[in-house]
Image (cartoon, rainbow, N blue to C red):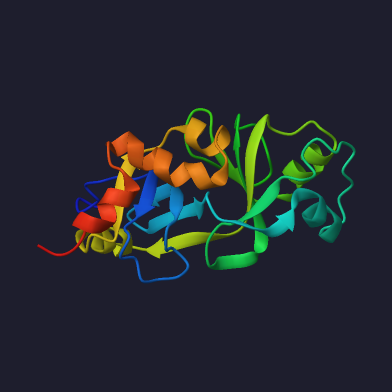
Length: 190
């Protein structure tokens, strides 16, 4: 680490897109930051389900699904990078081939072994599956924050795992004590 390392570490934080966000990939999104360091940041959008179920994804990647318990769960647009790859945000962490440990009980896994375990009902207790992720180069997220593109708040896993997707962004706003509807009226440049 250089002495000029980032003063803010957004790992295990939510990024809340401001109402003026012009990029359609991130408009009205709630992004969970899985890694943030001097090299950049990586996260997954957790409130944008796409028109695909877990059962359809498992069929596409040829993994048997022994239980139908999760078959109707939606897959999410995780971000504009590697949209052909699946990423599983889950708790507990576990020991998978390719996992990024985010916090004591949360990890992001991109290896096939977690999907095989989920299909045989031996995977993590709670999960969100995305196609793609969001990535920022070194200093980019800090610049975007300086431009008021995002609000940030320490993440609460319950927002991701206990709420339906349409309630996640308002719930994250509530963590800040802000109502999303009123934010659009006051947001802008001073």
